[in-house]
Every structure is written in C-alpha cells, then in structure tokens.
Length: 69
Image (cartoon, rainbow, N blue to C red):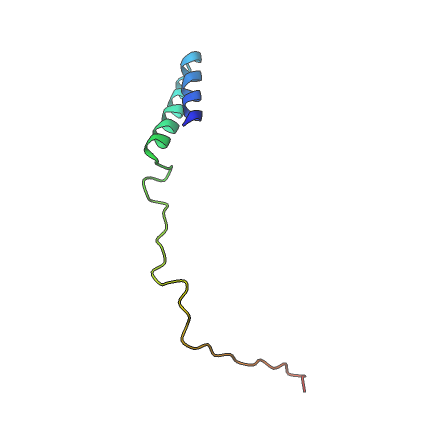
C-alpha cells in the first residue's frame, strides 16, 4: 500500500494522469486485497483426502534385464 501512496503522491505532484491511474489501481488492489485476476479466481482447492492416509496395500513387480542371469 505504501508503494501505491508514493505513486499517487508523485502523480499529483507532476500532474501525470497515467501514474495516477496506476497508483489508484495499486491502491484499490491493496486496500481490498484483490489481485489482477479477480477475487479468489487464482485460489486452489484444498485436497479432499488426508495426506497422512496410508494406502491399503502396495504391490511391487520385479523388473529383469534381458541379458541378466
């Protein structure tokens, strides 16, 4: 938010409209906790299964090389 306020201050000092728009956009994003892609649009869903769950059984298959005796 500090960076947005600095940009807005400099925009009003130099009378630059494009800097005022950019500073206003950064200020609104930081004030309302919005990102560039919208509210919550970039969030990921948490996994539904427990990560500590152990599978019931694990089966392994031995792989042999053709020339191996």
